[in-house]
Amino acid sequence: MPQLDGEKITVLTIKNRKEAGEKISAVTSYDYPSAKIASKAGIDIILVGDSLGMVLHGDKNTLKVDVDDIIYHTSMVAKAEPLSLVVSDMPFQSYHISVEKAVENALKIVKKGGAEAVKLEGGRKRFNVIEAIINAEIPVMGHLGLTPQSINRLGAYKVQGKVKGKAKEIIQDAIELERIGVFALVLESIPLELAKKITEKVSIPTIGIGAGKYCDGQVMVFHDLIGFTNLYLPKFVRKYADVYSIIYDALERYINDIKKENFPGDKESYHLNKDIDEFLK
Image (cartoon, rainbow, N blue to C red; front, side, top):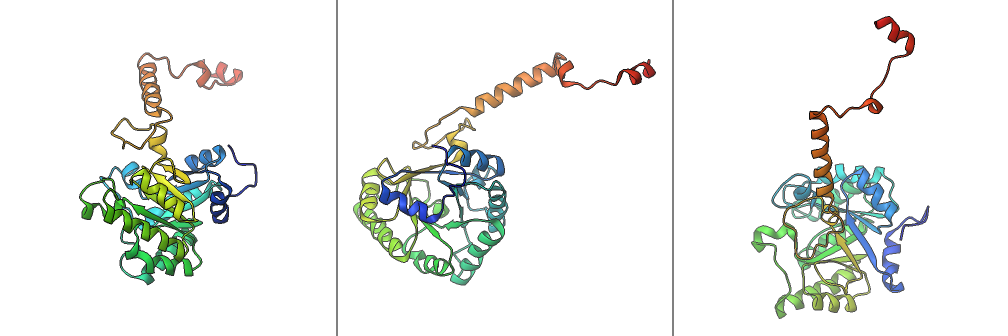
């Protein structure tokens, strides 16, 4: 449902959604027009994800995205003045070197980009970093399960938490992240039963992507959702439109009209004033 004018979504809004039993919608956005339409449609959270590396830059993974990339794309989203809460990913290396550097980068993303919160991947290895960023008055969204920035260690994008030991670790990390103070938690590519257990155990909202229907909300990549590509998409993606085919068809018709001299036509052309027209004869 579209948001009413002036109903700005905040971190507090998102935290209260779970208590009220209201599902949360989230989608990625990397620019002004997509942020505008997402906000108008009533999306709760806009995520400026490091997925832009794959979606926009054509990279094989998210690892090449840096802080400047995130700031640039966040600033475009922020210019749209969305009613949605704007959350920006902290990219690879931005929080891995030191706690101090992580806080500095988070501050840059908020101050220069206009993010209203940041998201970073990982559990127990990142507790001290997350706590420091929260202490710097920046809201943090956690991210457990499949963590794409760990692709070189994982070896492949595969479902996490399918064995007892790993599932228990993810549950423990989720509980600790809540204690530290994250306002919400992304659960990516984990069994729906595990996501259900975590959702029941924590009081903060869980946002699923490939984690089943029991999460408090869902997030999808904008370009996947609208069918902007005809390439392989993960199992958990549902295409709500086929924009690729629409654009492809439009371009084919455009090319054909040019070749047949059907474009531009009279209605797309400008004409001289009558007196000047006479002068040119």
